[in-house]
Amino acid sequence: MFPLRRNRRLRTNEAIRSMVRETIIHPNDFLVPLFVVEGKGVKDEIPSMPNYFRYSLDLLEQEVKELWSLGLKSVLLFAKVPDHLKDNKGTEALNPNGLMQRAVKTVKNACPDMLVMTDVALDPYSSYGHDGIVKNGIILNDESSHVLAEMALTHAQAGADFVAPSDMNDGRILEIRELLENEGFINTGIMSYSAKYASAFYGPFRDALDSAPVDMVNIPKDKKTYQMDYANRIEAIRETEMDINEGADIVMVKPGLCYLDIVREIKNTFDVPVAVYQVSGEYAMLKAAAEKGWLDHDAVMMEQVTAIKRAGGDIIASYFAKDVVKLIS
Ligand code: PBG
Image (cartoon, rainbow, N blue to C red; front, side, top):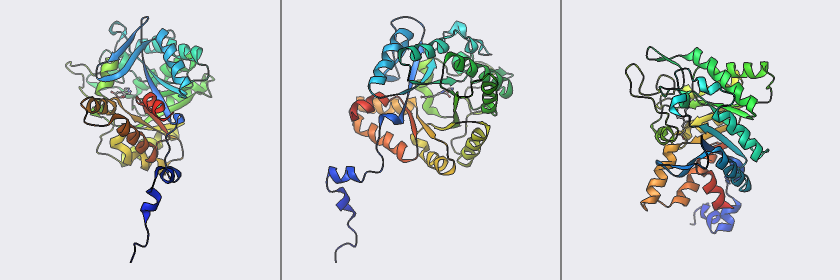
């Protein structure tokens, strides 16, 4: 009496395994986050993100050319703003000649076909490290959304293909969409961080941009009044539906690995492309374990990005993008 079905036949050797493999990782899957700083000749390693760097614009140019040569065709820009330019309203975020706006032009000059997405949020520009204007201990929703729309417009004017609001204020997608349409930027897309959780995995990113909420009286120490409670699932659907109705072209789930149940649910529920952000803490965890010799870096990295895609991630924003494409090319 042999087993009625021998599933192991399809696993006998690599040739058959690769023939029936359901999920294949390709350079097109990735969106590469990049951190930019002022200065010249700066390539600063981020202490909590081994082998990941902040670039000044001259070196950013080389970096995007290298990404392009590796087949990586889209980047997501984040600007590290010097302290003296930070205030409660994010004034510097609207500077048409600010670091972010110049970074967009730098990438487009170096690599005209590179897809450029920009982070739209106030935290790197905020003296309090919040994604909005703070008043009496509260992060103001509507006032912050107005600023975000103005900010997004300056990115579009600088040449960004997509703006990516990562703040989680209510109604900001509609505000951004309306302003872009009114100003003639009908083809500038919006990738909305729609289901973004208040996560402890963002620590290294806040080191990279020096953007953590400050420790001051009457300033909330965390982002729990605007980012989602990680215990919630149904709320992710509500958030995502709202952003799509307001005009988001791409929606996002963030962080990645702990939230793959949400990714699958969003993928099954909606028909727009789904991005997943494998965040800084996820990167740091694997780098640290690999450094200690406790995990096989490349094997775990491939397992993780494949799991994200298998769960329904059409776009993977990942600090591993370059490592992955080098490994698979
Ligand atoms: C903030 C923002 C964060 C990330 C992207 N945009 C951090 C936060 O919400 O505090 C995190 C990305 C990462 O951890 O890699 N607008």
